[in-house]
Length: 85
Image (tube, rainbow, N blue to C red):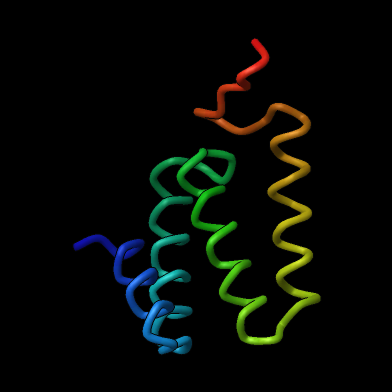
């Protein structure tokens, strides 16, 4: 089972502290191996933002989601393919 899958499991059973720990570990590994603008990193960031939202940390979640959205809009995400092209 991957760290990202563990985070989803812990989030689904509302063990948010454990999920957050695994999200942070997964993000660190993905960023180190793939770079900060890789699609897998962006997906993990989006999922982490959803966890923050679920734990009432809305301002932090909004900031993460804004960064993800900005990367996608500027086309700087590695591995992201627009359906319009």
